[in-house]
Length: 150
Image (cartoon, rainbow, N blue to C red; front, side, top):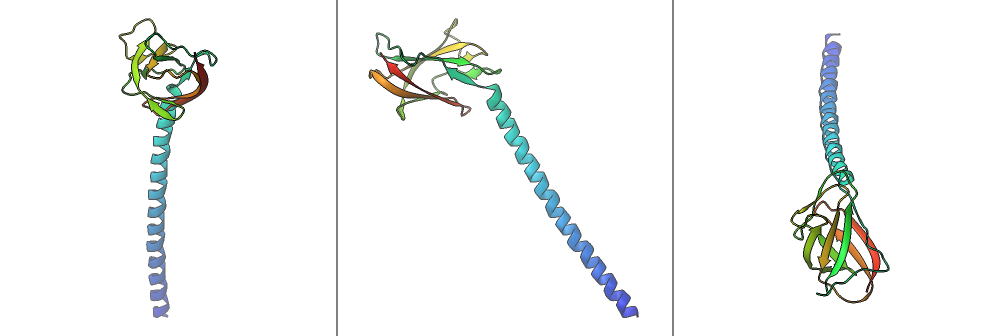
Protein backbone atom coordinates (compact mmCIF):
# COMPACT_ATOMS: atom_id res chain seq x y z
CA UNK A 1 0.00 0.00 0.00
CA UNK A 2 2.80 2.40 0.89
CA UNK A 3 4.55 1.66 -2.39
CA UNK A 4 1.44 2.72 -4.35
CA UNK A 5 1.31 6.06 -2.55
CA UNK A 6 5.01 6.59 -3.09
CA UNK A 7 4.76 5.87 -6.84
CA UNK A 8 1.74 8.18 -7.13
CA UNK A 9 3.69 10.99 -5.44
CA UNK A 10 6.58 10.46 -7.87
CA UNK A 11 4.19 10.59 -10.84
CA UNK A 12 2.49 13.70 -9.45
CA UNK A 13 5.82 15.52 -8.98
CA UNK A 14 6.92 14.46 -12.49
CA UNK A 15 3.71 15.86 -13.97
CA UNK A 16 4.24 19.13 -12.08
CA UNK A 17 7.80 19.45 -13.40
CA UNK A 18 6.73 18.76 -16.99
CA UNK A 19 3.82 21.21 -16.69
CA UNK A 20 6.12 23.93 -15.32
CA UNK A 21 8.57 23.40 -18.19
CA UNK A 22 5.84 23.54 -20.84
CA UNK A 23 4.28 26.66 -19.32
CA UNK A 24 7.72 28.33 -19.20
CA UNK A 25 8.28 27.59 -22.88
CA UNK A 26 4.82 28.90 -23.77
CA UNK A 27 5.35 32.08 -21.73
CA UNK A 28 8.72 32.72 -23.41
CA UNK A 29 7.26 32.12 -26.88
CA UNK A 30 4.32 34.43 -26.17
CA UNK A 31 6.68 37.15 -24.94
CA UNK A 32 8.85 36.89 -28.06
CA UNK A 33 5.79 37.07 -30.31
CA UNK A 34 4.47 40.14 -28.50
CA UNK A 35 7.86 41.89 -28.80
CA UNK A 36 7.94 41.12 -32.52
CA UNK A 37 4.43 42.48 -32.98
CA UNK A 38 5.34 45.64 -31.09
CA UNK A 39 8.39 46.24 -33.28
CA UNK A 40 6.41 45.60 -36.47
CA UNK A 41 3.69 47.93 -35.22
CA UNK A 42 6.22 50.70 -34.59
CA UNK A 43 7.70 50.24 -38.06
CA UNK A 44 4.26 50.26 -39.67
CA UNK A 45 3.26 53.35 -37.70
CA UNK A 46 6.40 55.11 -38.89
CA UNK A 47 5.66 54.17 -42.48
CA UNK A 48 2.06 55.34 -42.22
CA UNK A 49 2.99 58.71 -40.77
CA UNK A 50 5.77 59.22 -43.33
CA UNK A 51 4.39 59.07 -46.84
CA UNK A 52 4.85 60.93 -50.11
CA UNK A 53 3.53 61.01 -53.64
CA UNK A 54 5.20 61.87 -56.94
CA UNK A 55 3.16 64.73 -58.39
CA UNK A 56 4.76 65.13 -61.82
CA UNK A 57 2.54 65.27 -64.88
CA UNK A 58 3.21 61.85 -66.48
CA UNK A 59 2.97 63.31 -69.96
CA UNK A 60 5.39 66.15 -69.31
CA UNK A 61 8.41 65.49 -67.08
CA UNK A 62 10.56 68.60 -67.27
CA UNK A 63 14.21 68.69 -68.23
CA UNK A 64 16.00 71.98 -67.55
CA UNK A 65 18.75 73.76 -69.51
CA UNK A 66 21.53 71.83 -67.74
CA UNK A 67 19.94 68.52 -68.81
CA UNK A 68 18.80 67.51 -65.34
CA UNK A 69 15.32 66.07 -64.99
CA UNK A 70 13.04 67.37 -62.24
CA UNK A 71 10.85 65.12 -60.11
CA UNK A 72 8.33 66.73 -57.77
CA UNK A 73 7.37 65.05 -54.48
CA UNK A 74 4.68 66.00 -51.99
CA UNK A 75 4.77 64.85 -48.38
CA UNK A 76 1.31 63.37 -47.81
CA UNK A 77 2.13 62.00 -44.36
CA UNK A 78 1.91 63.62 -40.96
CA UNK A 79 5.63 63.48 -40.16
CA UNK A 80 8.48 65.29 -41.91
CA UNK A 81 10.68 63.38 -44.35
CA UNK A 82 14.43 63.87 -44.59
CA UNK A 83 14.85 65.42 -48.03
CA UNK A 84 18.51 65.18 -48.93
CA UNK A 85 20.26 63.58 -51.88
CA UNK A 86 22.28 61.41 -49.48
CA UNK A 87 19.20 59.57 -48.14
CA UNK A 88 16.91 59.42 -51.19
CA UNK A 89 17.45 57.07 -54.12
CA UNK A 90 16.05 57.38 -57.63
CA UNK A 91 15.87 54.61 -60.21
CA UNK A 92 15.07 55.27 -63.86
CA UNK A 93 14.05 52.16 -65.78
CA UNK A 94 15.54 50.10 -62.93
CA UNK A 95 18.94 51.80 -63.03
CA UNK A 96 20.14 54.07 -60.21
CA UNK A 97 20.73 57.69 -61.18
CA UNK A 98 22.52 60.48 -59.38
CA UNK A 99 20.55 63.18 -57.62
CA UNK A 100 22.33 66.45 -58.32
CA UNK A 101 20.28 68.52 -55.87
CA UNK A 102 17.14 68.69 -53.74
CA UNK A 103 14.96 71.72 -53.10
CA UNK A 104 12.02 72.30 -50.78
CA UNK A 105 9.60 74.73 -52.41
CA UNK A 106 9.65 78.03 -50.54
CA UNK A 107 12.99 77.45 -48.79
CA UNK A 108 15.79 75.75 -50.70
CA UNK A 109 18.10 75.63 -47.67
CA UNK A 110 15.83 73.26 -45.72
CA UNK A 111 16.64 69.54 -45.91
CA UNK A 112 13.38 68.33 -44.36
CA UNK A 113 10.15 68.03 -46.30
CA UNK A 114 7.36 68.97 -43.90
CA UNK A 115 3.79 67.72 -44.04
CA UNK A 116 1.96 68.91 -47.19
CA UNK A 117 5.15 70.52 -48.54
CA UNK A 118 6.45 70.02 -52.07
CA UNK A 119 10.05 69.20 -52.88
CA UNK A 120 11.96 68.97 -56.13
CA UNK A 121 14.63 66.42 -57.03
CA UNK A 122 17.09 67.24 -59.80
CA UNK A 123 18.37 63.98 -61.26
CA UNK A 124 21.19 63.54 -63.72
CA UNK A 125 19.23 61.92 -66.54
CA UNK A 126 18.32 63.52 -69.83
CA UNK A 127 17.18 60.85 -72.29
CA UNK A 128 13.87 61.90 -73.81
CA UNK A 129 10.95 59.50 -74.02
CA UNK A 130 8.85 57.43 -71.65
CA UNK A 131 10.62 56.15 -68.56
CA UNK A 132 9.71 54.47 -65.29
CA UNK A 133 10.84 56.48 -62.25
CA UNK A 134 11.09 55.04 -58.74
CA UNK A 135 11.88 57.17 -55.69
CA UNK A 136 12.88 55.47 -52.41
CA UNK A 137 13.36 57.25 -49.07
CA UNK A 138 15.64 56.22 -46.22
CA UNK A 139 12.59 54.79 -44.40
CA UNK A 140 12.05 52.36 -47.28
CA UNK A 141 8.98 54.10 -48.66
CA UNK A 142 8.93 53.84 -52.45
CA UNK A 143 6.73 55.36 -55.13
CA UNK A 144 6.82 54.66 -58.87
CA UNK A 145 5.42 56.47 -61.88
CA UNK A 146 5.85 56.38 -65.62
CA UNK A 147 6.32 59.63 -67.47
CA UNK A 148 7.68 61.18 -70.62
CA UNK A 149 10.77 63.38 -70.42
CA UNK A 150 10.40 66.25 -72.87
